[in-house]
Length: 109
Image (tube, rainbow, N blue to C red):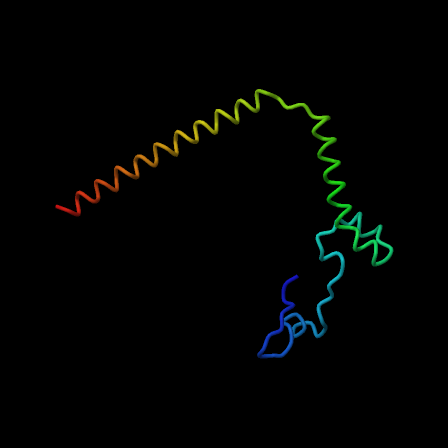
């Protein structure tokens, strides 16, 4: 959340100066999903919540990988695109080197 820092000129945060009250920072300003925030009952649940997010995420990705089959035509298109991009980059690098050497020769004249 922005505007929480103390402004030395006015001795309060800019949020507090504008609205007359301190900024309220709650669980909704965190990166926790709303579904987990609603399940929290006490401080211990809050401490274990980040660990449950990571483990659930790992399980979801494993399941998704098992369920989805990768289309090989898409993979081939990606590889061809990457090869074309490499060729374009290489030609641009060669052009840059040529232009630099031309510029250097022109400066020597």
